Image 1 (cartoon, one colour):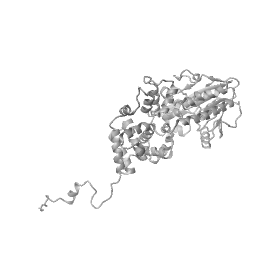
Image 2 (cartoon, rainbow, N blue to C red):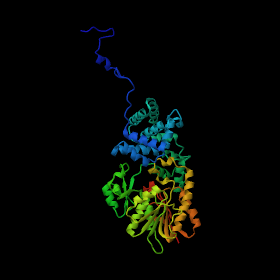
Image 3 (cartoon, rainbow, N blue to C red):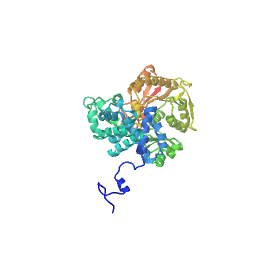
Image 4 (cartoon, rainbow, N blue to C red):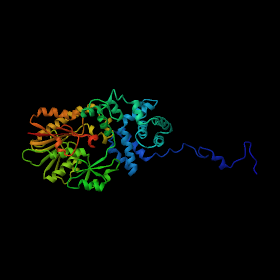
Amino acid sequence: MSAPGRDGPRRSPRARGAGRSGPPRGRSGPARPPEPDLSRLAAFQLLVSVRVRDAYANLALPSILRRHRLRGRDAALATELGYGTLRARGLLDAVIEACSDRPLERVEPHLLDALRLGSYQLLRTRIPPHAAVATTVELVRAEAGSRAGGFVNAVLRRVGERDEAAWVAQLAPSAAEDPVGHAAFAHAHPRWIAQSFADALGKPADPADAELDAALAADDARPAVHLLARPGEITAAELALVTGGAEAPYSPYGVHLEAGSGDVAELDAVSEGLALVQDEGSQLVALALTRAELTGTDTGRWLDLCAGPGGKAALLGGLADLDGATLDAVEPSEHRAELVRRAVPELPVTVHQADGRSAPLPDAAFDRVLVDAPCSGLGALRRRPEARWRRQPSDVSALASLQRELLAAALRHVRPGGVVAYVTCSPHLAETVGVLTRVLRAHPEVQRLDARECLPGVPDLGDGPTVQLWPHRHGTDAMFLALLRRD
């Protein structure tokens, strides 16, 4: 029997090492940082790409998913976290600043990206709080070390002490005194955009009127994917069957897929050119142009004056092919003009790379002209999560001038008795009725048609003659439509 030592019986070398938490003798150096969750890493890299390279999220994300070989549920999680965090940035920043011991401008940008990602999981998902915090801290430790991870851990734990509703109640402007500001904060919109929605809805700043709140909530929600069944190639019923979607309620060529359906480009119908991604609202405004009544002889000549990247040209080209008509499509950008050509293969469409304001086309020659004017895109913020924080009020005035010039050019190209559709993906009054008022004042020979008559079956279209679609009313982007006939 071995003799005991002064502090007790001797232990074997293995037993002596069993209680240590540090590395075994003979090894040194820091522990290897944890491997971050790939879905969250992809979402984090999307946030960095948008911030550093000013990237568009919908263009940057697919390559990030491919790099990490994410598919199915993992890709859907990365998309939800990345898009959702970008969409909610204003709300998240206010909460983070309330939970941090330093102002946001003194937080390292990559740590702020991580804090936004973690806060989004805590406030707007069903991910368990401990998982949201732990995975975000692991991500930061792998990227920036343990000290940065400790800071992020402390802030996120404070964020998780309240739910989203409690933070809104604490930080948002008073709903009674500033209903627009309160709705903007609660639904993560800049105040000026919320005000433009209120103006377009024609609603007073009354907290008892819930429509502004409903409009912003719908704009802040994850949208369904809308597909266009190419006319003459596949029916909406057939497309719904092969994709597992549902036929759209209003467009005879539309199909809806559930949000988070994965990479739509991988669908056979899309990869084979039978269908393309297009919001139902975009389909409806293009269809309205083809349904508007003409006077005089129908020559079968149509014009898309702002055609890039080619979605509406594809729909109009397909319908023109069925009707024995032709379509001229104008796009000033070489890259986007090429996208239009790719969107209209074997269709009776001629693509012109030119500025729509001075395109080398004959005057008074076209029966139907579409002006899908470049705009602020405020009507499609739900599909472009980073856009709401990039746009500024000053952008609208510059765009309104271009919109007026394009509409005036369209009225020059349409024949007497022909119809022009003026379309914007924005409800901002300066880009819609403001443009119409200025242009029509200079063109007394032009009359406004009731656009509601060209959208059969679509409810809640207001008093006319123009139409404003809304996500909360119609499930579409907030598209504006005016139909004009030159007498």
